[in-house]
Image (cartoon, rainbow, N blue to C red; front, side, top):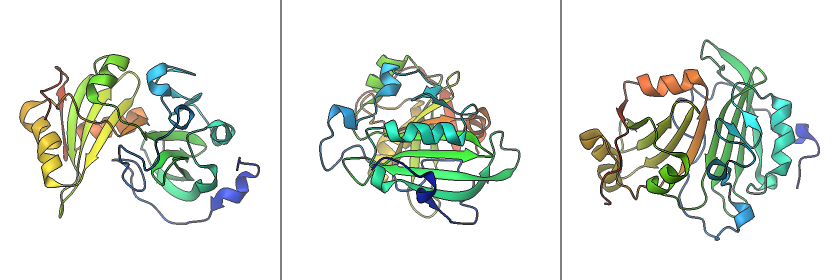
Length: 239
């Protein structure tokens, strides 16, 4: 079902959902889907540059696009399930992280699974964040071949009482972060902790999502006390 009446999707949920510093809002994406997606059910625009290259995504850009721009793009996306779009009224950090402000948070599942494939935050009528979950497998080596070497590699420790960490590849000029999350000790040791020890991740690291951020949020990633970043010097051996 394409979006005919934007108001239909507005689910009034009040309150603050929190400062969304790390990660996609909602469930953690996984690299594989129950049903193998067809080409039109996968968003590979980041790696093709069509219709635009990062920091632009599908004609939208953080800091430039409005809510109406977002709503005009949503019906054209073939990789999301339009019957499963959810829109929440929220209060979240604004574009420059100077204050919290009202806005909307948009989530959509993949068309071929219940995995969240898209998260958009629009605060004060300004697009502040785009998160695209990959419903196909792509490795660190492959993304570097498409996008060139990132400026930084890093990891974030997100868990206090249980294991939860992320590995990041960061392209500063395009305000792009590619990320993977791990929630068990074996995977954390294999990917997150090796970044801490060696400043590199295995070349076969699966990348799970792309995050298009504001400059303020990107700087918050780089300065977080729960994260550590290194200049990218290449991938480590496969694990």
